[in-house]
Amino acid sequence: MLKTTSIAFLSVLAPLCAAVVYDATLDALPLNTTHDYVIVGGGVAGSVVANRLTENANVSVLLIEAGPFHKGVIETEVPFYFWLGIPSTYQWNYTTVPQLSANNRSISYPRGHILGGSSAINGMVYDRAATSDFDKLANITGDSGWAWESMLTYYEKLETFGPPADGHNITGQFDPSVHGFSGPLGVSLPGYSQTLDSLVLETLNNSSFPYNEDSNSGNELGFAWQVSTINNGTRTTAATAYLADNYLARPNLDVVVNALVTRVLASNGSDIDTIEFHAVGNTTNLNVQASREVIMSAGSINTPHILLNSGIGDNATLSAMNITPVHHLPSVGQNMSDTTVIYVSWEVNSTDTFDALLNNETARAEAFAEWNTTRTGRMANGVINLSGMLRMNESDPTVQSIYQQYSDSIAGSNDADFEMLFIDGYTTTSNSTYLSMLYGVLSPMSRGSVTLNASDPMGPPLIDPNYFASEYDVLVMRQALLTGFDFVSSEQWSSYLVEPVNGLAEVIEAVGTSNFTAMDELMRNGVQNGAHLVATSSMSPYGADWGVVDPDLRVKGLNGLRIVDASVYPFVPGGATQLPTYCLAERASDVIKADQ
Image (tube, rainbow, N blue to C red; front, side, top):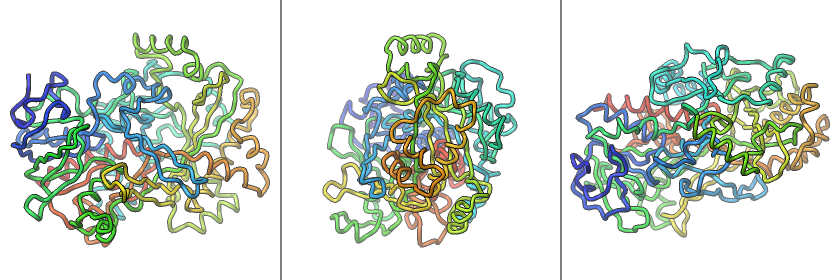
């Protein structure tokens, strides 16, 4: 049946599930309902806030998502589809502007376009960041509520740490004292053993590289088993976790999919209280109102895009685009930061990689049948089994010089400078088998922007991560690669690695010299999106003349508008930003509740 309690203006729309989610493409929508809160974006943050606010039966929430409903999309359920590819229907299909320090390459920038947002298409990596990341955030903002001890409570609240898909004994692979076992988000350790795992562990046992029982304890340094957002061999998303049927059944929660928000407005000339949107494929704009607050959770690209089109940004820039300025806030869309990432690969002497699933239809069909029947096997596994969060070699004079030169800007002395992840294959159509290693600069100094396209402001924004614009990022990536080469130089790798590919051989040949030409060229030709984009709506102290939101996430100088998504982080917190965004939204929900 249709739900009409608090969303009469959608009463003609057909339900998509027993709990009723409405598809905006099925009918033109009249305007006759006001909700307490309207949330723009049904990704990680929006899903969390919608869930937590409607725990109070007296509070009504409308959640608006541009993408389609998530149920029945097999590609967002099977973890291995991260490698097979998520259909473009469920992505925004963004591309960066040509990157000046990456040989003018335009780089794909995937973002989720489905209920659940990017949690439905990402690498499922569970990284909490380090104690010092959140303590730094608390120090920057002047709000101790953002410190690690406060945020750890939310991390434990949001998760259910479950068994891996293969049911193996995980003693010694995580610390149960810092995890939760009754939250909405199901997570687990790797559920498929790889030959690669034993090589990494043997190297750790015979070297000075440290093993970390749990890199999510606040101390991220060392090599650890990678936790993933996978439960029962199936990807867990913000939608499956926080918008499960029992939550969608709440009469005070309404969800509309396939509805594209274009602007936020002030109907009375002062407080932001109105959302302008239209059904996907229909250019007729409609408005809906919030009686308490509009909450932007559209993500680090779409949140500033909507704000700028709403006249919230730099007045001069907006006027030049014939957009009427509403509120002068120059930091909107600026200061973008993203993990700088490259992959390198070797052919290997092994048949135990995932390459066969990419290139052999029979092997792929057999693996899918196993997953479909038992939720086990390689297709039930995450992207990474073992990962390293490392500092540069501080005994190296070159590294000492880097730390000295950039001491005011880089990560703290207990933070990782880069990540080194081991991947059991390579996304190519070759019939060979491969080892790939991902390297990421975790505290990049390069800053970019999200801006409007002057020729089509409502169209896709101009995304400029500005990769490798800072020499610091280049220097750290060099050290990351050198550390990786050292890691795989030990005897146990000699019979496994066959030969490096895609220009890596020339780089390795130059190791030990002062010539970094080949390495730098490999980096600039190979840099990829980190998918950890933040800071386009940065949090800053109350009264600061920079930033977009105050520590309570209210937009500076405006009433009725709050931002809750990864865009408010002023720097990349640790490794992957998925879990810090879940955690941010959990605390934001309590902050909003305290204001009710």
